[in-house]
Image: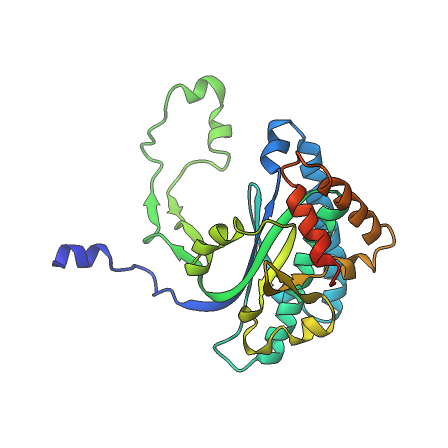
Length: 281
């Protein structure tokens, strides 16, 4: 590699480093159909209910001082990505157990809210190294308002005060801050998710490293079951609903049985899978 190429790939910012992270990718099945049919209010209510349930969980978590380790939401159209950084660089096994328990709780909130609204969703959880953080552009630039270049067309629509509400004088343009989340795990999430012909959120047994899931398993928020002959942990939506008097697991199962019986339904197989694994929850 010549000197020119070396300079092209030399970062301006500090080198980015990998951190261990628990991530989940959740897909709202039928999202595209809802958008095309104009069923926007249903999507909005789904998000609103999730937000309210998260708020209720946050009130409880604040009492225990867990605010700083809540999962981070990245919402992209029909996919919701949740991420929580794990402190694997230090010996903080107990803290990571709490993080994982809260992370599973938030996944259960999304799953249970969707099931209560009869919206089929599927998701996978993974623990792996990822790159997360923020990079900045090069040094901020100095701008001057002495000879501004203004498009005349702008003045036909706006006044000078609307274009420059705080005036126009010498000042600094701040750098661009660009957040990032990437890594091998993110590259594989969508591909792996497409293989799950079921409704629910799952974590393969082999991904529960360093016993961080022990507390979550004991609390019955995630339960070991089988999917396609393989052992997995499933988010226990029944446990979440047991604390909500307006939600009934029996009603969800009854709806799933009705949907599974519809041979022409594209989601019949997935609702049947929900019935099968939920018997173990």
